[in-house]
Length: 229
Length: 247
Image (cartoon, rainbow over all chains, first blue to last red; front, side, top):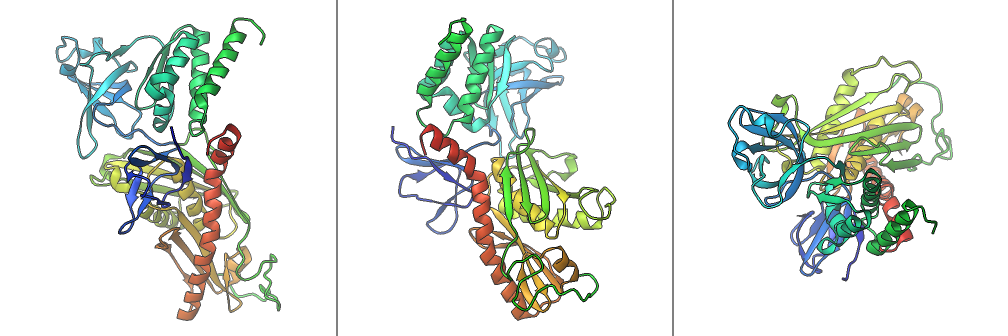
C-alpha cells in the first residue's frame, strides 16, 4: 500500500493531479481544490480525500450504526446515533410484531441497538431499520466511543484490526460506523479491548499500527495471565 | 479611546512602551484540545490576554425557533470573567459583550461551511480570563482554531489582528495603554488564505492613507499569526507521527 500522509488545514490547496478529489475537499477557484478539514490527505487508486482528525458522524444510506434509544413515541423510537441530528425508527422497521402504543416493551430509553440507516433527506432527517441480517438489540456489554473518522482504522483492512483485538481478548465486538463500539465479555478482557481501541484512535494517523497493536496485545495478555515478560 | 494624557507612548527611536517596534506583535501562544468534554477547544495567550475557547456541535438548534432550514447557526458567546480586568467587571452579558458575540458569530459564519448542517447550531464559548486589549480578535483567532480542531468543515482559518493610531503613528497590535490613550483602533478578522475580510470595526478616526497603512500592516501580520495557528493544530500530530513512524 502506497500511502502519503500529509497534514492539512482548512483552506490549504490540494494537489488534484494525484487523483480525483472526493471527500473533505471543496472547489476554491477555477481549477483549484482546497481542504475543508484539519486532517490528513489520503491518496487511494483514483481518489484523493481529506480525512479529518475528529468530528461528528454524518449518516449515509446503508451504514450500520450503533444507536441509543432516547425517546419512545406511540409508533416510533427516537435514536441518538452520535451525530448532529437524532434519527427515528418506525415500529414496522423492526423484526417484532408490534402494536402501536406498547412498543416500549421491545425497546425502552437507554437501550442500545445495532441498526442500519435506511433513508436520508435533504434536511438531514434520517430513519434506521432493524430489518436486516445481523441487526439487533444489543443486550449486555459495554459501550465505548471513538470519533467517527477513525472507524475505518479501528476495523482495519478487511476487519484485520478488530479481529485481532477480538481474538486476543476473547471478547465480542460490534463496531458501528458512527464511532460507537459495543464490547461484551469478561470485565478484564473488555477493559483491555477498550484500551486497545483507544490506542488505535490516538495513533490512527501513524503507519505500522497493526504490528504495534499485535505486540501491545501480546504484552498485556502475558501480564493478565500472571506471566512476566 | 480614553482621555488624552501626557504619557509618551512612543519614544524618539520609535520604540513603544513595552519595547516593541511599530510593526511588532506581542508574543502569541496557542494550545489546542485543552478541554476534555468539548468537541474542540483552544487556549490562547496573546500578550497579557488569556482566553479559553470551547466549541460544541454541530447539534440540533434549540430553542427550535432559532433553527434555520438551510444552514447552521453559529452561537458565539464572548464573556469576560469578573477578574479579567483591574476593576471587577460585573458578571453577565452587557452591551459590549453582546456586540462582540455578534460580530464574532458573523465572522465565523463566513469561514464555516454552515450550509452542510441545516437546522443545527454550533456553540462557541469564548471566556476571557485575563484582558489586555484586543480580546475580540484574540478570541476570534482562538475560536477558529478550536472550530478546526472540532473537525467542523471550514473554507479557511480566520485570523484576527488589530492596528491603530498612537501618538500620530500607525502601529500594529495595540497594547492596553495604547488602546486607552491612542487615537484610533482598528480590529480586523481575515480569512488566512483568501484574504477576505470577515470582521472590521473602527474606534476613533483614521485618514484614508492611514487606513491603508494599517490594513497593510494587519495583512502582513496575519501571515505570522496564521503560522502560529497552524503549528498549534498540527504540532502534536506531527510529533506523534514522527515518533511512531509515518508522516
